[in-house]
Image 1: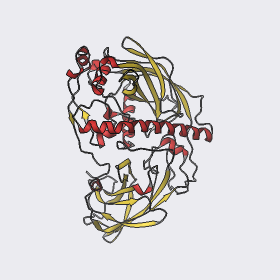
Image 2: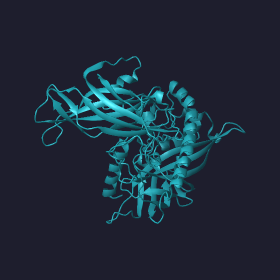
Image 3: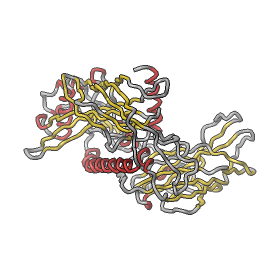
Image 4: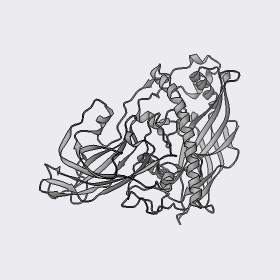
Length: 504
């Protein structure tokens, strides 16, 4: 892989991480019934700057996150652009209003907006000269709609909301004025490009949207025309994954131990390569979560039995492709009790190189697949493979070829069909996760023997365990003839859940 392409991948991943969405374990998103909301932050008044320097420039930034009564912080942390302050003696107020939008399937009475105000100080050259300073925060009930409301700020950090016994105190002086309205419709384009419970504003770049951004003033009617940019199909030719020699045996042993079965009761059914378009916000494609092709095995090489085709890859430099290697296994608990288990064992991604004219071009791609659940781009629940040693790597190789002659979403009706199909698949996937909830909570409350995958949001933001000491594939393969009970146990640590908001 060229150095230039690797730098592009690093930059793409960094931007995708900024749009990462937090869905706590068990949190369900029903995209068949969603309501849209527009937020107008009309201004802040009464900010006192005791050590203000006359020649310096002072601005504020709004940092907002949704807060669920049961699941705490959800969605994406939104940061507004810098809003200038004007002085009236010792007190300052904002000059302009800020707008934002989000949609959700959560009942209004359970949902709140938490907004923190952060002060930024710059010198006359526009350089930030001091650490951003939190001013205060507010908790806005989503059910209070359609009227302008003025609220006093709370002292301290909004993290106090995590503690149900905490009683935040009012900050005397500054007040924030806002208006929250329910939209007449949720644009179908935003359903396709932006996740639920994800606050976004006019400064955010949304690849796939014509013009890249929302209108500068987002009205509650949302009658401004939103359009998608052109897209194409992409073919994944000659795709293969090189796996360690004893990889299948290792999966069988670990799953047998995890489910309390014998090795003979666990059988690898098939491996599949899954591919999708990602716009740095979420997966985007033609009605399926991923294009999926079965793979056949020859030695330690898995080869696609066909050519994966990814539809609706937007012709935008910030659009990438995500690859996942999925294994399907059968677990025989009895003669007539066979459970089918689908697990992701590796993930990779790439940007789409462009020629001198800015057009996508075909190229050969190779990459070591990520096997660490914490590093997942999509938030997929991984099977946590035990080692990162070089001899145990999963290596993806393929040729990526764009077919520019196929347009995306020819009609509005087709787009509606795409989103409807996507919703149904997402709901099925969420239900499967919900079925695992009780079992996984029981596992985490007992002895620390967790091997199964966790989503990166579970690992980073929730108090679910992560296996840190893992046996190598070579060691596991060498013990396939021994009792699974003699396998080394993983050690587990718990980490506190960090808040998504600005303060540290």
